[in-house]
Image (cartoon, rainbow, N blue to C red; front, top):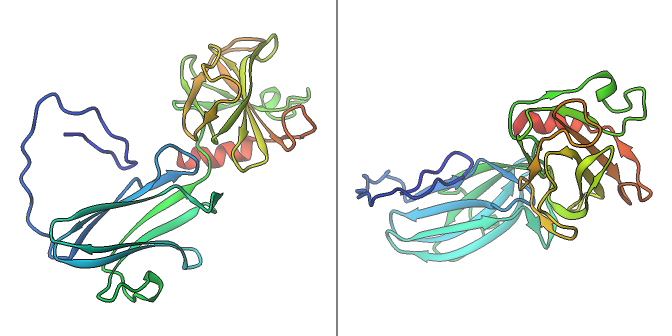
Length: 269
């Protein structure tokens, strides 16, 4: 037995075997469960819908973008006998291209003729989730710096300081490829990630330890990259976070004030 929370994260398996009896049927032809109500683009875990047939069905699953009603993807699953379980996953891309953040909905259609979801009429079941494109990088209590600790700060400060206890885990705000992993007298231990399909570099500085992720490593959104520290020229434990437009960090790009983005990510992460 594993416990799964609302975001789809799974616990370790139980130490002993547990017998579970099947519950009474819901009365509907199909049980549908969306695993994870919030999906991060370029993360390890995709959007997933689990299906359990309560009676024989010929099933097609459509994925609809709720904002404009567009049919984004569809999966013809064919005939499902009673008790058949299936799942459908989506990684937030079409033809390799990331799709816009927003609300999406799996819609399950039952067809006797194998028709497409776009022509199938009313779905027999639905399940919605939110696709978001970034995750707040500090996974613990934190506070935003002001004045000299903010972007500009009256001293050419090219990022935003976010204060948290040393040792608090840091995760990649956006997946991508590690461009730099080094120590510098002012920045301390730092890592720079070229964000996947963003034309933006993300820099994380004053980390407690050197990140184990070497240059060229592929990183996923929400993956642990290190811990909050106070290495280099740091006044207390904090993350100095920078965002740079293309072509990148100190390679012709321009530093961007990251505070509005950080606050937006913090609101839902």
